Structures are given as structure tokens and as C-alpha cells.
Amino acid sequence: MQLTFVLGLFLFLFAPFASGAAPAQMRALLMTGYGSSDVLRLDRIPVPAPAAGEVRIRVHAASINPIDWKIRSGLLQKSFPVSLPYIPSRDVAGTIDAVGPNVTRWKAGDDVIALLDGGGLAEYVNAPAESVALKPARLSFEAAAGIPTASLAAWRTLIGNADIKPGQRVLIHGGAGGVGSTAVQLAHWRGAHVIATASARNHEYLKAIGADEVIDYRTTRFEEVAKNVDVVLDTVGGDTLQRSPAVLREGGTLLSIVARLPAQACSERKLHCPDPSTATQEQPGEELTKLAQLFDSGALKISIEAEFPLEQAAKALELSETERARGKIIVRVID
Ligand SMILES: NC(=O)c1ccc[n+]([C@@H]2O[C@H](COP(=O)([O-])OP(=O)(O)OC[C@H]3O[C@@H](n4cnc5c(N)ncnc54)[C@H](OP(=O)(O)O)[C@@H]3O)[C@@H](O)[C@H]2O)c1
Image 1 (tube, rainbow, N blue to C red):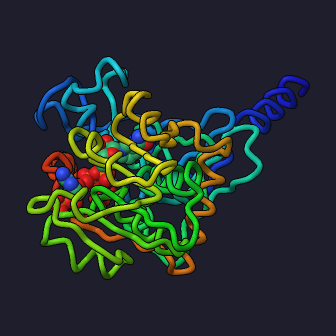
Image 2: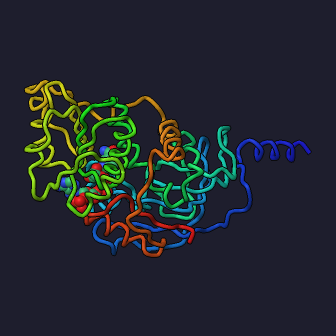
Image 3: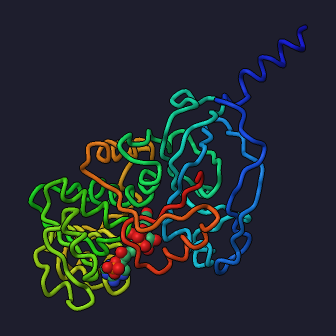
């Protein structure tokens, strides 16, 4: 009798709270080494149980970011090591199906988005409770999956670091990409004068989402047309970042999510060059909640370049690797 009571209490305290029986196994895209798409294979693995402080999400859709193909190719082996087998994708939208011990904020049945450390290309994934936010009701799961990594990068830099103000001149390099698309809309929402660089095929798109001026970086050196800029957000790096101080007014802000300029290049022109990783003290879930409200209000939208079923997720990473996608690349996990 006593043993039954103790066992019952143990299960009550430590077993995850589930909405229904999850299957024992799930489909997942496993990365088994470094290289091209042939290191990725669809397989069946056990469904993970959520640990303390985690929720388990039944994944409807995941999104692909450049970091996914950079990890796969081995480019980030030193700076961003992962243990193999690794499941790509850091962004999901889905429905919570179980909560681990010590989670009070979430319950089974909640439709959510989450920022992960990987694991998104699987039918179920665990996420820390503080990295989760309610899915914007207005968005499909596919569109909502496009939010976390890219929109957080735009939010943390333009709002967290630069706190852009109405009337400021903001130049966004790579305006048509996943990060750039949200950045253009955020800067427009804040009332800034938005200048964006992109190839000509993306100019109408950029004007439609809030750019006041567009520069074709393939035919025009941006520093010849963009002058007296208050804030630059660089999502391209390399030569684009090196040439960016020239467009900023003295005391302007240079933000890059790709690389850092040497301190001297910033101090020479009295520029403010903050580190994006110091933009916020907030948990990802709190920031995602603010972003979700902007998506629900219609101030922000997700543009989808392409959608793939989970069976073809390797192609989604290949498309990201072309560095030509407009907006986000989505993988439908539950088709
Ligand atoms: N540190 C962070 O937290 C963080 C977070 C997210 C992303 N990132 C990094 O930021 C970079 C951008 O990410 P993303 O998700 O926005 O990438 P993405 O979606 O793959 O960007 C693709 C876009 O880049 C544009 N592009 C390519 N070369 C360009 C150039 N020279 N000038 C202007 N636009 C150019 C393309 O437009 P066109 O076809 O018109 O050229 C395309 O629309 C990646 O390196 C990524 O790893 C960092």
C-alpha cells in the first residue's frame, strides 16, 4: 500500500503531463557527419520525454536558416560544435503535447513557436519553457515557423541595440533575406526612413514591405547613394560591412549579425558598434511574445520562398545555401 502510494506520488511529480499518448518513435532528419546533403538521412528514432523545465512540441513546421547548412557543411565545427547525430533546424511552430516537471506556464494543446538549439526537423522536439511563445493566431504554422531565429536577430539589433526612432535613416543590407525582411518591416513600423540593398528582382518586394529606397548592390556602390545614415544593419558581411562606416553620420550605429569590425574602424568615425549578443536580458520567449503580437497585428508578415515536406528537407538546406532566398524557407513536418 505504502509502495503504491510512493510510486503514485513519484509518477505525479516527475512524469511528463501529456495530452494523449505520443507514439514511441518519430521521423527525424539526422545529420550523421559533415559535408553535403548525403550526410542527412530520414530515420525513425525514439520520441524524447520532456525533462524538468521543458515542453514537448508536436512539430507542424520548421524553418531553415543559414546556420543549418553552415553546421551541415562543417564550416562551424570549431565555433559551433554539435554532437552527432544532430537534427537540424532551430525554429519550430507546433502544438505542445507534454510538459515536463516544474513547467507551469504551458499546457498540452497550446499552439506555440519556439527557438531551439537544433532538433526542429523531427515530429517531436523538447524546448526550454522560456524559449516558447504563443503562435500568432493570424499565421499558419508554416508562416509562424519562419519567425524565431531571423525575426529575433532583426528585433535584437534594431530594437534592442539601436532602439531606432521615427525619422531616422536606417540602411539594411540584405533586405530580402530572412532577417532583412523582418528588419525592413520593423524599421518601417518604427517610422524610420528605410533604405535596403538587394538585387533588382527583389526591389518591388522590398517596397511592398516598407522600404522607402532600394539600392541594387550589383550595379551601384551603396555608399555613393546612401548618405548621412543613422543606423546600418548588415546581414551580408565581408566587403559590405567594411564599406558601411562611410554611409553613417558621425555617432551613428553599425550593427552586423555576421562579423565585427575592428574597434579602430568604429572609433575613427565615433561610431557605436554594439555586440548584438548583448542586446537584451530577456528570455527568448519574452521577445518572441512581443514579436508575435506584431505579427498578429499585421505590422509584420512572413514571406515564404519555398516549402518542402520533411522527406525533402535536405533540399531546403541546399536552397538556403544558394543565399538567394527571399524571406523564409519552410519544412512541413506534419504534411
Ligand atoms: N548572429 C545571429 O544571431 C544571426 C541570426 C540570423 C542570421 N545570421 C546570419 O546572417 C546572415 C543572413 O541571414 P538570413 O537568414 O537573412 O539569410 P538568407 O535569408 O539566406 O539571405 C538571403 C538573401 O541575401 C541577399 N543577399 C545575398 N548577397 C547579398 C549582397 N551582397 N547584398 C545584399 N543582399 C544580398 C539575397 O538577396 P538578392 O537575391 O537580392 O541578392 C537573398 O534574398 C547569414 O550569414 C546568417 O548566418 C546571424
